[in-house]
Length: 91
Image (cartoon, rainbow, N blue to C red; front, side, top):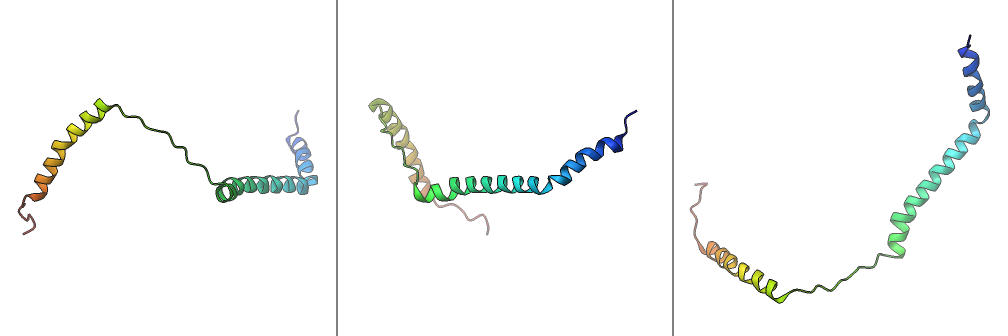
């Protein structure tokens, strides 16, 4: 028959003996992670800001002309609406 108390005491003794080492390893891992985060988001952003990528945009003349023709009536409608007097609904 398995004796649970006897089996569970062995891992606990190992953990007790190596507690300082495990705490030190976890501490080092946390410090390394914090250093990595600091390097990526604080140091790298200040020392070497990312370069902007520019790409030349080429428009087809026919498509551009069609868009401009569609925008003209809209602009007229907006100007017409801006000139109208509307009744005050809060009076």
